[in-house]
Amino acid sequence: MTGRAGELLLSSLRRRRGAFVRLTGWSLLQGVPAFLSGWAVARAVDDGFLAGRTGTGLAWLGALAAAVVIGAWATHHATLGLSALVEPLRDELVTLVTSGTLHRSAQVGRPADTAGVARLTEHVEIAREAYGAVVVFVQGFVVTAVGVLLGLATLDPALLLFVVPPLLAGLGLFAGALRALAARQRAVVLADEGTAESVGTLTGGLRDVVACGAEDLVRERTGARIDAAARATRALARATALRTASLGIGGWLPLVLLLAGAPWLVQRGVTAGAVLGAVTYVSQGLQPALQGLVQGVGGSGLWLLVTIGRITEVSAPAAPVPAGGGPATPAGSGREGGGLAAPASGSPKSPAGGGPAGPARGGLGPGAGRRPPGGRAAHRPRGAHVELDGVTFRYARSAEPVISGLDLVLRPGENLAVVGPSGAGKSTFAALVAGVLEPGAGQVRLDGVPVRSLATDGLARRRVLIPQEAYVFAGTLWENLTYLEPGAAPEAVDAAVDTVGARPLVERLGGYDAPADPQELSAGERQLLALVRAYLPPAGLVLLDEATCHLDPEAERRAEVAFARRAGTLVVCAHRISSALRADRVLVLDGTRAGLGTHEELMAGSALYRDLVGHWEVTASPTPGRF
Image (tube, rainbow, N blue to C red; front, side):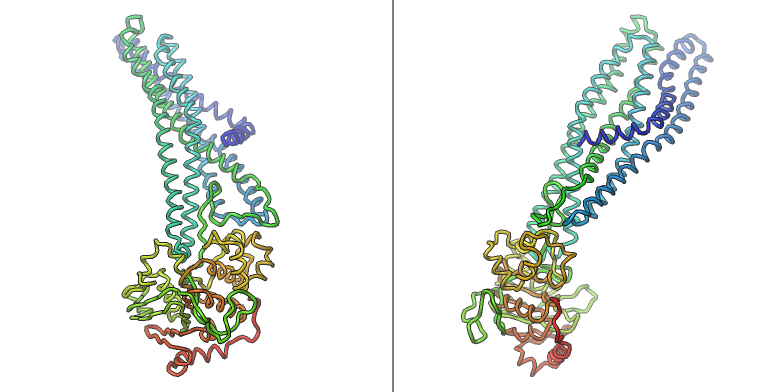
């Protein structure tokens, strides 16, 4: 990584030799105050103040002030010349990022990584600022160090014995620590990327996570990323102590040695002015320059190497994805070490639920789970027992309740259809039963346990909610179908695909190893994949919140009957009258009012239900669509 970054920087520098030479010239002029500082102070003391010639001493200090003005003027022009080096590098990095992104996006089966582009763009800006800082600090240190050493030599060569050895030792320690600092800085960058990627994916699928009861998994994975970032930061902080040590050895130790050795120097014939000039050289010239070098190279320089290395490795042309698919990385996975993908059966409209089903009318056609004659299952394994006790829910304190004082008991294995006009609270009801929403009053219990308390106890295996807008992530069909049941046997997946009616779709897409691109699938195709995904886990409760609304009537019937014949309890937010006809009981929601009964009972006693049935019968489409 460091080698590729260094090559890119050197290549950019070679193409702009003229600008670099001009910048060096201004930097040499900047070094005039550093060279004159100690020498002027020594002359002012020895030839002026100690000799009783105050005017001479003030003249030397005036010369030093003039040199400072010259240095400031040179600094102004050096800063302007710096842009001739920095801005072209920025343009080269932007071109590298853009071309790499376009190249990767052109690969078949690779979704556009907009978040990754944003991060690389941020890296470009970091590299731009860091490059300018490094050039300034490195050139400033070299010019200042040369000026200081020349000045010390002109005062008295013996002074170099107190400055050069600790300076070289400090620089050696710093140079030796750079590789470790670069590795730790890179670890911090990658950890930050992983955390940002995980959190970004999480915030985009919070309801899906809750819908699947995946809170523990998400907490574990996201927490691991955050812990990794903390460890990387602590490791960098420990390594940074070497920078402080090198600064102490190279910048402060010479000053201590000069002060401690002053009596010896004076006995040897070194003047008091020369000793004071040497102290000035170290404290006002060498020490600030070394501090700038250590902080600049050890901070901005490391960021420069790491970010440019990251840009070059991520922007490199990607290997083509095989046309047949192969294992794909779920959306949101990190570039290194995986990431967070949170596909679920939930959606922003209404999350989670899961399980079996109740009686249903109508045949299933080819596939598993055929019912014996008579329309009812001869034996239905036990499902979830659902209780709503005085449940009230509103979306704001000042808002009217969507559901008010609702009492309801669903027997294990029962099939309930929920109907009502748009906005009557059907999705809210499903979310409350699934434990995604918490009632303002009352309690929802699943098998006698408050459903909200099950969130950390494998809730995804107790219930599954499938919303209207099904969630499909960028991965293979197999990854999408088995997300809630990763250990599912191929035979079980085949049975689920055939029973739900998704076999033609699987074959059309090229089999289980084929990539599932959400953008290339219709709404109905996405619903079929979500239905198979929810069919696999052994949940005791399944909630279909208009989860088949994009299927044609026959496909909808087949899917609903498949879930009804599974062991368990089924709740269907009905999209067509056929769903209500297949249910054991029907719940009619109309604001804060609710009615419950069989189809026949409600036709006789609920005007709203009769209106809904009439509306369904009038608007039923005689020509089923593709899905």
